[in-house]
Length: 389
Ligand SMILES: *Cc1c(COP(=O)(O)O)cnc(C)c1O
Image (cartoon, rainbow, N blue to C red):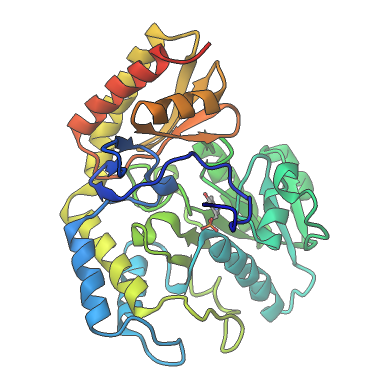
């Protein structure tokens, strides 16, 4: 069945035919608790009636026109994103990598237009993941992802996260520092608040832009809408994607007026980016996050989730040893192979995502309810008890 697909993914032999809330169903009567959520995409679970409705409405009206015309839904969505953040300007694209790539371009052009033509370098950090385009691969600098794809664009420096390292590398050649407030693919590693503040201080001091890649950790995932809010810093640019369309592809670059000042007519573009259908859906997602008090759901249930996982760890210390992360972006450190746990979980009706550092990622829909979490505890226990030796 899959012989005509490029073999880029090792796929589980399963497919789904229906979804409702935090649950997915296959054609053979199987039922799965979806704590992967399409890798942090299905923020409102599956089949949300309001999302279905807004998609139907957009289809009945007009679903695509190009950016050669005004798109009212796009303007409304941009306004809403600016109202709830530091940003004044938004550019819409279709994916996370495109958002990060565009953010890199925005930062270089900013300095170029100010006459600082040598400021082109982008500083990034170990274990980062910023996407699979050539520039974002260069930013992530993960040999597993870059091997065989060179030459990569130049002007990227991937360093250990420390004040000393950053002070050594930051210079009048630096355009931007790019960081995930919480690394996702890298294994749910939280950037300490003090480090975000340190980066803000050093970037401001050196006239360098601070870009926060919140493709995975933004959009309410941590219980705050943006994942830098708890650190009390204000970046110059943010990237969003995964959860923004709750499953409909859309990405965004958010920037201050100053940081976006180089992005003038003709400097950047996207054929599909910000079309009426995508923007209608994303607008509705933001509305629902407000109306259904999604952020407080994440905040309050996250503690319940953490406490339950810690109890399970107590009984299975030979298999899982600790849990880390924030809100509904948690990583369980495994003692046995994380892929073995993910596979056994799947066989027992629970969807999880492995990540680097032998981590199992939990990325449940943000509207997951308490009884789903209780079911998760049950399924995780069954999984751990049934691990093949
Ligand atoms: C997933 C991810 C990306 C890439 O997003 P795509 O939509 O797959 O291109 C970039 N940055 C981070 C932090 C991500 O988690």
